[in-house]
Length: 584
Image (cartoon, rainbow, N blue to C red; front, side, top):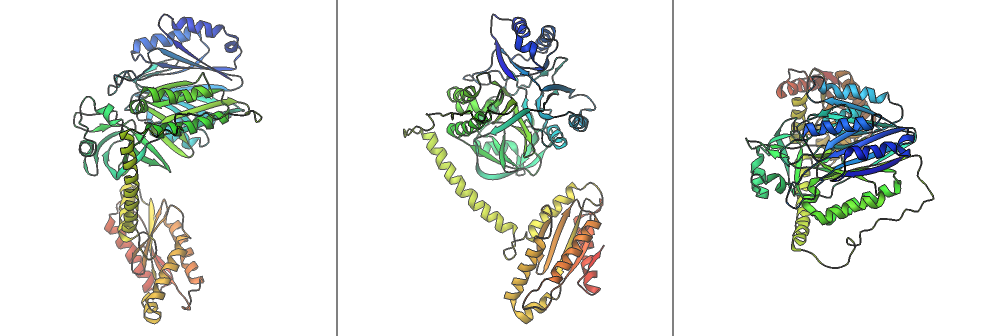
């Protein structure tokens, strides 16, 4: 395969560039062709004319295009001309899928497209563009990835001329969309795609919790207070016309799996809520973050050297405007030059958000760089890849600005604070003897499961009690009693699933919450637990047994009604002779 990048500068026409492309032998001999367009002009009529021009001169080409950011600040270096990236494949195939976000069937797209993608032989990747910052493509991206778990999804949310004023658009060979998605499905037997995600920001200060939000990325309250109060108190950033630019220096971080991801607000509403590029769900833990330009550059350099090892024939880079706002033009140019050293024809753009979803997690990001490298056929194993080095990063000159010293101080202080918070949180949530969740934490999890249940049988709970435990303490002493509690807890903990939640309710009583488990599954587990305890020796005791009560949640259940049924089931198990389970 080959990649070519063109810029339509002033004095040149798009038609002239397309004619040259169409006459080239590489274009004519290609098995399939994809044209990626990055356009700074957001005018719909202009884009439609551009679309028709492409169709006129290159009628057989597949097109996926998006608008990019304009001058978001006075010192911002932005794209002023139309950029074209041409991917010419020798053996691989491209299929274009597109949908209008206003269509009544749009919410079912994950199912319909997911099944279509499954039918594409040798599908290797999905290039994903979306327009309208309020469209929130995260759920669609996740649904598509769930249906095609080994296929990475990468791309961007289209940018706009002015930060805070969404005029973003995308277009294909057929249509311009002010609210929609376009996906290029890339398939081929020997096509290889290698994706990377880099951030560089680190959490700062204490944890905050999203307490009110909606599926469109609107956040109303954090920690039970208005989101405006959060920015007033911790950052002293007023909600004015400069808010989006000032807030960019302090992205909100949250965890996706084991990876920190970031979001920055697009704009605020008249009623002082914040809009983010994608949903921040209620209960999400977030942190303000900090960084140094060197942190960002070092992470990017590591990623770029991994890409170089891959030996790409094509390379796309999707970056957040926040990186330039934070680092400045000089360092952002240095960062981009890393990619140019790998592939001079690299394709890059700034959008509202970066998209990367793989089987290891991901989503829609901001403040990051997402890259996708392409290659047809195997890499040259005999080729020596020289590492890309930025000598300014490894310079031994001890020249530090005061701001860097303050960041270093904040970093060390934050690490100490987070360590202390983690220890306190662990003590607050766990029983110190058994290491299991305590009653307070179990209550919290149980109430959460009740809030999200949709129907009868969404989950089951069981409570077990160590039979005649008072006699153990009376005959052998509390030290042996404690050892029994720990031993039984470890046995049960090792016998349940990773998604099950086990906690100490009090004394010798324990509760296990079983998500997505009907009563039949709970019965099987209860019998396995009962038999396991009965069959293990607990010296100096001759024998140890447990009694269990089981119940399945009902759609009509309150917290109290659920616990009453479980408690009655355990009472019946003990009344009927112990060493058994009962169901209510």
